[in-house]
Image 1 (cartoon, one colour):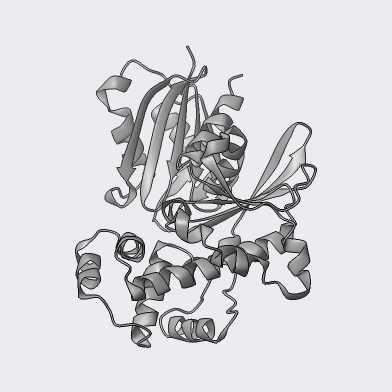
Image 2: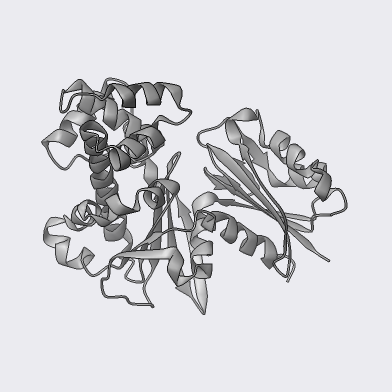
Length: 329
């Protein structure tokens, strides 16, 4: 029985899944990425699990949150470097495929059920056109899908690192604030978990709203301050946290609209990543789509693009498994 290993490697967590070709999951395990100095170490820990001792891996796909070049990959927000040939030899894996994590997300879209997707803008779908996917988490991933016979040909991008372009005076102030801290302000600097924290700090610095002492303390105590900001925005009606999340969503929508103008994905633009799924109600309130469509003379063009939000948090893992399976069937 041939075995598949799918791995979704992120800056915050790395998710492993060992399964049969037929789809039976043998083991699924998540690890905190920052706890390991290299990918080799976390892979070793997973493979050392007692329930895996009797299995040999025939094909693996490692979906990497960073650029992939041939048989090599780097994780953008970790000091991890991967070489597929070295890993195959060291861990006795027959075939290893490396791909960008958002290429894996793109491949996984076709496997999603209807209830794993929420439509934010109906648009006018053209199934012969491209698709695009964007998603904020530890970083900001993007990928493009082009129709290819009965499936999709996927192209990874590093578009999340494009220069941030403010769209109003408040965002100009945000850019000026960020330029005092960083040499290059990309969309990923702002549309990501750490970016939400930066937006919160910026709004606090200009005195937009009084900071909630409970929120500040919770941020200090938490492993992920961005999660705290989201929780206070949603659960506690906190003015500063709500303003930060709303500005974050507005900038996120603007960059999704930039991607839409570049690709014209009339088969659908998909929003992935944990931040959107965990803040679904805020994304449905209209700020995201308003910013997405605010493209001047091109407003009527982007209004025709279907916009869909992915609720399935393991879509990248699903895509990685599909790619691993291709090598054995």
